[in-house]
Length: 123
Image (cartoon, rainbow, N blue to C red; front, side, top):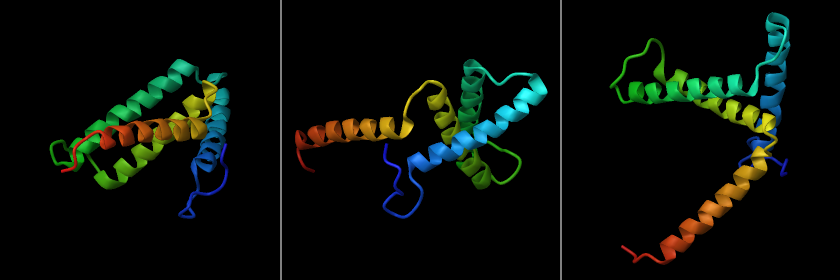
């Protein structure tokens, strides 16, 4: 796993992953005190899908086809970041090294797209 910062000096996926899990640990402390247990994997997945669906509504709001209360741009930034957080949390619970999986997936997709582009006529 690559734990060095990204080329632009911003934290990379490994640092984002670590921070996400620290925040999740705080939620787990609250859940333990309130519920007497932490959320199950299906509950976590439902939380993610709920937030991801709301991103769809926020995109509509950004396109002015759906009204929401509040600042659309701020809410969109928040929900997109929260969805990324959920991905790290779910990956951790499913024993997926998300930074490694992301790199491997982008390499595979990029290589496939490059092969496709080489086989296409130039415009």
